[in-house]
Length: 354
Image (tube, rainbow, N blue to C red; front, top):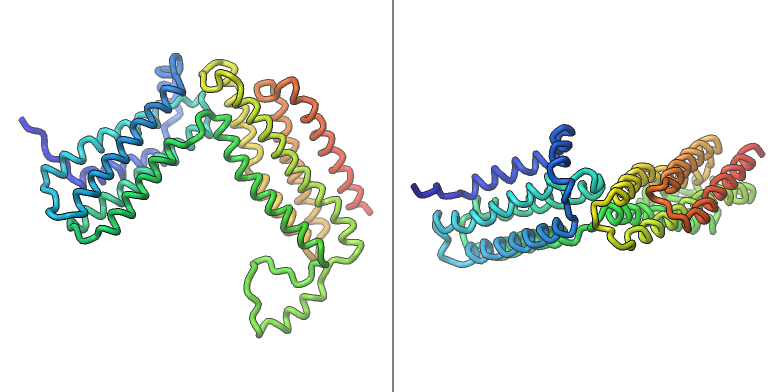
């Protein structure tokens, strides 16, 4: 008996279900069973080859789908089904690839694959929804745009970091950029006296001029700026922590056999996840620190925010010093950073007591 035609709506329903399942995640016990089944002979190199092949196929199927709907005549139901079947197979393959990536390969890497897969499925759903709602060749620009979005998500999936070490490094680079912006902002502000600073970066209206003139009176004193220099050192310290962390992650990722699921690599990937967990709130903590430096300075709040940032640095350092992550030749600079944390903390405590 001939198989029933696959409709756009049925594939949309499958995509919706897949997206929901991926967002909910795999249960702990189910994931343990999957790890036992696939972890022994798992190869990241083969895994990424499968991801690349499948993503390229999806891109090609999207192109065929787009061309079929862009120009008359509109495809018939059996022709649509013929185009959707291989796309459905690729969608099933992506789901399998997401599910069968062992947790031991790293949580950050797994999250990257999941997020990229969800974004790809969402782009496919938008393209299919257009064809479902408006089965007409009159929307060439829309089909082209949505197909291009699907291509982009396919490329994103193929371009993901290949190991958890690289995945964590990418996340830390994004955090480091936020820290750099915070340092730049407060450094530029300290070149003046802090008067008239605008936290929301809102345009100044004429009716606000009177209020602005009053706000101009609240600036940093010379003594304030001298004391704040010690707190700026905290931001520099966080910048240094990120620089050293990224350097260590790069060094470890460049080691031969970085994609092998060996016991040492699993230990490394686990330590990298712990580092990610310890640093993920640092940009937010540093943002609070910078905001509390602006006039009028509440020194108690500033001190609280400073210690919150320094405590986060200590936790990150404790992870960096783990045997699974640190190398023998990295211990010297990590010890230096640890000493810098202690020295900086002493400085801000002295300033707070003065």
